[in-house]
Length: 194
Image (tube, rainbow, N blue to C red; front, top):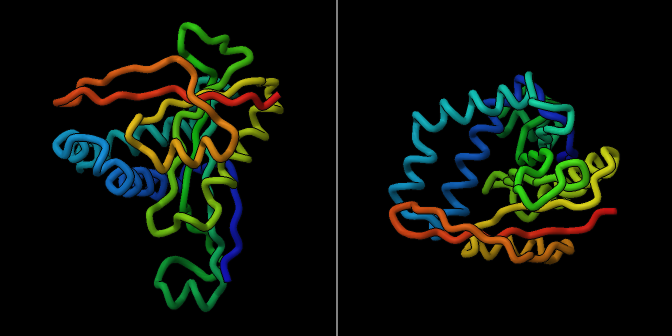
């Protein structure tokens, strides 16, 4: 049986964080984004860019309110050796969440934060990692004095919207349309954590 938890990301987590992001996007967005755009966002050159971005997020975040959290499973000795993944008792990154002060011009960054990323590796979904990441994010933001959290989601990403709605989030009136070889609509969701 694996122990699970959430902690702050470390520099050595960057390869696993990058891999988690790319794997999660390939599965979650395959029916949401145009194929060519998704390939470009998850290909080898993008992987290098994302790796650099996540390393910067860990070692030199722009402010103390910028955070990258990871969901981990700590494998027991038998499972670890049988799977061939790491040392017995080693932690495997299986999900990630990042947040920062809100940047949308209609929001107050002193009281509103943005959930920038919430992803779970496709092989580890439906095990509570997303909920643990979301709860840990809210705990950190409450400690920072944040009252409201927003996030942007693709309007066609029904699983993410359903997950957030079940956790008490709801759409506000803001939306944007990205030009990705065809228009791709995003909606902003919000929740009160005060």
